[in-house]
Amino acid sequence: MKRVLVTGGAGYIGSHACKALLRAGIEPVCFDSLDRGHREAVKWGPLVTADLRDGAALDQAFATYRPEAVLHFAALTYVGESVGDPIRYYDNNVGGSLGLIAAMRRAGVDRLVFSSTCAVYGTPDRLPITEDMALNPISPYGHSKRMVEQAIVDAAQAHGLRYAILRYFNACGLDPDGELGEDHDPETHLVPRALMAAAGTLAHLELFGDDYPTPDGTCIRDYIHVSDLADAHVAALRYTGGASAALCANLGTGRGHSVREVLDTVARVTGRKVPVTLAPRRAGDPAALYADPSLARRELGFAPRHSDLDSIVRTAWPHFRRKETQA
Ligand code: UDP
Image (cartoon, rainbow, N blue to C red):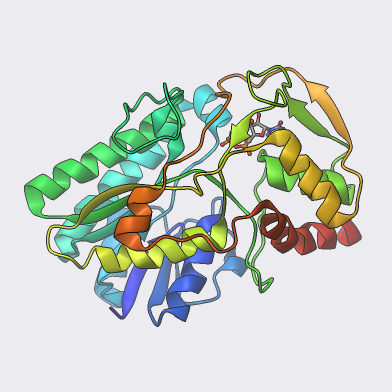
C-alpha cells in the first residue's frame, strides 16, 4: 500500500490519521473542502481542495493520485447544529458519502475505512456498548452516520466493497509531538472547553447537569486519544486488504469517566483552576456511554496507548496554553 485518499484530512481526527499513515510508509492525499478543516494541518501529503459532492473533482483526484484505498473522515459533526439544520447534515454527510462511494466504484477502488460514531446507538439499554446492539440515533447527525453505514454495507453486498466502519467514542487529546492542534469553531467538547477555561480564554466551563444517576451525578463518557484513533485507522486500512473484509467496530477504551473526573484531571495536570458553573442538563445527553472495545482489539490489535486522562490532558494543554498567550 503506497497511497490513500483521506477525505477530511485537514480536520482534527483526519490530520492525526495522516501523520500516522506517513509514519507507516503510506502517503496520505488529503481531500478537504477547508470549509471546517485547516490548511496548516495538512503536513504529510498533497492537498486537493474540493467538496465531496463534486464528482468531477473526486474523479480527477482518483485519476491523478491513484490511491489504493480511502479513509473517509469528512463530515459535519455538531449534534446541536444537526437538529437545527438537518437537511444540510443529510446533504453533506449522506450525499457526500454516496458521491464518494460512487466515485470509488468508477475508479476501481474497493477499500474504505469510514468514521462513524457511538451516536448511532442513541441511548443504549445496557453497558458496555457492543456492536450488535440496536441502532437508535437521536439526532440528525447520528442518523446521517447510520445511513452511511447502511449504504456501505449494501455496496459491499452489491459490488464487493471491502470496508471497516469505526464507531468512535469521545475523541480528545492532541499529537504528543505537538505538531497538530484542535480548532473547532465553535468548540463544544468537554476536554478542549475545560482547557480553555484553565487557560482563561473561556470565562468558565458550564457543567451540564450534576443530577444524573451516576456515582458523582455527572455524565460518564469513554474518552479516547486521537493518536490512538489514528493508529487504529492504519490497522483498519491493513484489515481492508483481506478478502471480503467487513468490520464494524467500536473504538473506545472500555472505561468511563465522569465530567467531574475530567475537570479534576485538567486542574491537577495544568496546575490551574478550572472555573465551573453548574448549568441545566444539555438536551439529548445520555447519563453514561462506554464501549466494549474487544472486537477492535481482536480484529485490529487495537490497544490504546495514550488514552488515560492524564495523557489526554498533558498532550492537549500546550496548544490551549499557547492560545492564552496569543489572546
Ligand atoms: N459537557 C459539559 N460542559 C461542556 C461540554 C460538555 O458539561 O461545556 C459534558 C456533556 O454534557 C457530556 C460530556 O461533557 O456529558 C461530554 O460532552 P462532549 O460534548 O465533549 O461529547 P459528547 O459525549 O456529547 O459527544
